[in-house]
Image 1 (cartoon, rainbow, N blue to C red):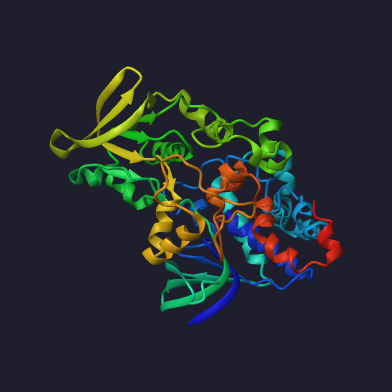
Image 2 (cartoon, rainbow, N blue to C red; image 1 turned 180 degrees about the vertical axis):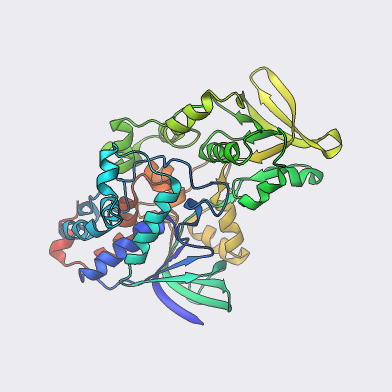
Length: 440
């Protein structure tokens, strides 16, 4: 089967929900006729519901759900006068409207609008995507390869479905999701004792339920926190050592920090020097824990922190344990644990390498410059529409846009702004000259 669409989105998570909701509203208003297709291998909001990966679904959401799929509702910036009508159309998809439809809104407000769980947020995203239908299609399958058509003007996405394979072409491709867990070299003989950020919950059943076992958690960000919170409940007798390269910090939630997430233009984010942008992302998003969860483990005698960077994981006690070597401020530290969880994060570029054949990667780098073989720590060139700069057709990668365009694009900080940036090229071409001139 071969199909065509304007926009193809890989992954049915929060970013896809924000984009498809905006597509639905834009089509309903008659501003243009957009077609969007979402391809997901498991289920809508899979990573939020606790059935896939390390999260149990019980973890508290790091941001308030009021920052929903339309937040920050400033569509006039990207769409001019049409933006007000677009934001008004999004009213049917707000968190408040979802809670009202479940007859739970008053109870939630009277309780002080408490944090919600990942599972609750996943249910909200599922509700949103079930209602965003105008011009939107969903396909259950796994993307196995992405190529270019013969003219090099459209992406061709090959999908493995239950009944076979299908091909879908699009003029713009949006890749969502975290990517592949970062490489974590270890001796093959201890593979059964090593877990990763995307390990399935069933895999953790290898940890015996009886007795106390010592588990090393490697990483200092949200993945490490999720692993710790999940395993504390899954194996309550176990002990945990969190190896983190810097002191554990809680997420900043001041007005100024939040403002940068929802409106990076207010401080002219793109004009800041790279180190300033890196420092902000490091201390407000990556490598931090949300305050309630940090408080929960801070006084838990089963949890301890080890400051340093893990450099090697090997076999110990004849393969019955793992040896973790950590470079600490005092020098190399060598400790033994029963199991280890690699929570050093995900690599989106590594996932892209698996999707694009060598010939396509060569063409991408011919147009956009080095991508996969860039020097470590250098910035990937992402443009204002969250696209890989210099590349035609558009390849939009919000997960890589945090450093270049603003920290909210890599997480839940501004889903409405993210969708505006992704869809602006489609909509602006369809606006009248008067409407186009009103764009700020």
